[in-house]
Amino acid sequence: MRALTKALVSATAVIGIAAGGLATAGTATAAPASAQQQAASAEVAPLAVVNLGLNTTRAKHWQCYLRDLGYRPGTIDGQLGTDSWKAAQRLFRALGYYDDSIDGIVGPNTITGLQRFLNYIGDYNGGNYNLAVDGVAGPATKDAFWDFNGPNFCA
Image (cartoon, rainbow, N blue to C red; front, side):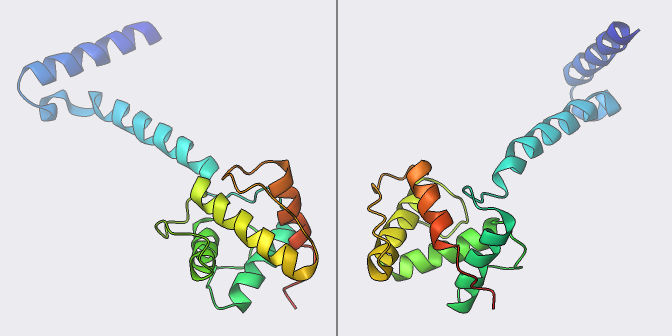
């Protein structure tokens, strides 16, 4: 039955397209579009929150740190989403550690900015993270980010 339904839907779509428009295909072409939209949403969803190894409490500390410096990370919820990373990118740009677009995407340039920031703040606070500035969020970068967000900035 399922194979027959698939065959009929495919045949209807082909006939509709051949007849000169998607409108004649009716709902037969609507199903694949929905499936494509769902697949695109599934691909984007895992990228929506990037805590880089921080638990919710430490991610809140980072958000509060950004907020307290005036960089508007959005809701303090422990989920480092687009608003939090845009705030971080603005901070990194102000410090001269980031020269890409403020888009909230945690790519190599954002990680490079974070690594430069952590090296700076580590030296300043005696942490001496000495991270390789390579744009890769490896174990050393995640450990330094975890360590930096240990104090409670959400007082």
